[in-house]
Amino acid sequence: MSSTHQRFDANAGGYARFRPDYPPSILDPLSRAIAAVPGAITLPVIDVGSGTGIFTRQLAASLPESVPVVGVEPSAAMRSEAGSAPDTDARISYVDGVAEKLPAGDASVRAVVAATAAHWFDRPAFYREAHRVLVPSGVLAIVEYVRDVANSPAAAAIEAFLRHHGGPKAYVRPDYPDELRNLAGFSGSRAVYKDVVLPLTMDGFTGLALSSSHARPVVETLGQAATEAALRDLAAPLMGQDGTIPYGYRFQLFLAVRGA
Image (tube, rainbow, N blue to C red; front, side, top):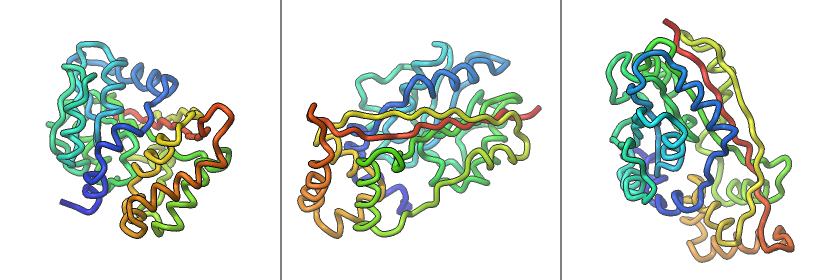
């Protein structure tokens, strides 16, 4: 198993519990684009790097009932967490697989989606695979959320804490609009953005921070108890009078359409 997969195995439960849902303003345009793909409505949608199924379940709920959704996830711990979710739709299945070798036949799916996962991929290989498995006019979509460090003191505080104690990031945030705009075999790229402020409890703040892939080296350095205590100290002055901590995210959708 790669070190990338191990980053998530250790805290699959925390990821499932504390990571946010995606807003309708991101899901709605994506589901409309997927539903509009010509051809059999029973062609599946693939959610690559599906993790604990947070986005997979939301996506399935937003699509016509005849559209199956397949979560592709290399981490067994993440797949187990996803499969045990009480709100899992019967149309959803989870399979072992990676972005660079999708478990699907040529021209066999109506959409390939990656939600807050594509920054871990070998993206040129992933894009080639997406082109291979998509039907003509099929949708390639990348969805993500990023900390709004410019406008959210809580998000900026977690970013600085993880950077200070955990070392440099394991990836550089890709320029998805540029990648999709210049992607061979695709056209019609567009982007949708939505800023959201989440009211987090103290447990929610610490749990969200610990669910980051970059929290593992912090815990290895400071220990679990000391890391949690440091996060509580960090959050205390940020708490509002209602007892919650306003935490800012920017949700983003980038999509393109496969050519004929």
